[in-house]
Length: 236
Image (tube, rainbow, N blue to C red; front, side, top):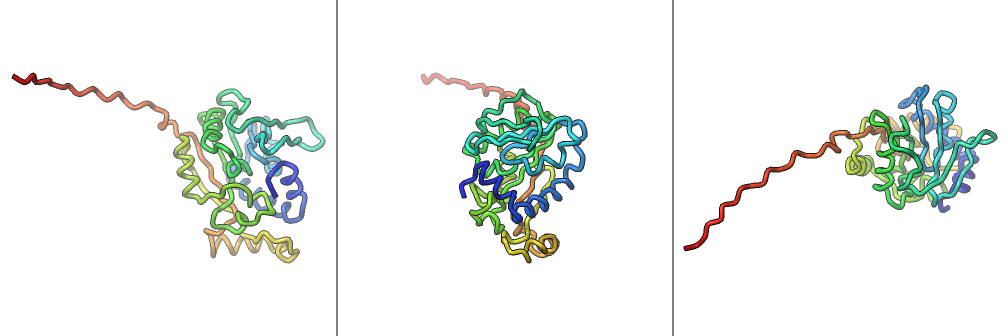
């Protein structure tokens, strides 16, 4: 299943997709419990998760990269969605207090350029939250789900990528220890799988969740290095 908005919507409308969204929303809500009066951008395919803060935030906007196709959001309401190139976001500098990336980074054609654009439109005291398939987890190898598309990342790879794009990791979390199965027994016992997996096999989560802030020290220019004096000696 090549990831596009139609395939992602079909997945999240299924029992397995609904279960995955519920488990992941629970972890996201622990990190950002309330975003009252703040401006929030969801980048990638973030619509199933922005519902956490839509009523509380001042505004929530979904942006899907052009390669995924356009997606209307919210259902039955005024349009709060748009599409653009991932490395040319149509927003002014420092437009958002919070930016959530789900199903965005792993499919990015230019991940570093996308994150530089995210840095630009995020306020200086804002926060970025990235959900990516975990390289060691089962979901990254299940191509029939959106989490099995694109480039999975280990927590260390995410940290290095963020550091290279002038972000600083603030905290990490994980989710989706439940196997990516359609079996009703697995779906019904999903929370049990989460509790056991978190305690016994923490490195095998389906997704990693990383919160980051702008590394403002990374953009302070270094003091110019004084030129060394050179003494030329003319040979006799």
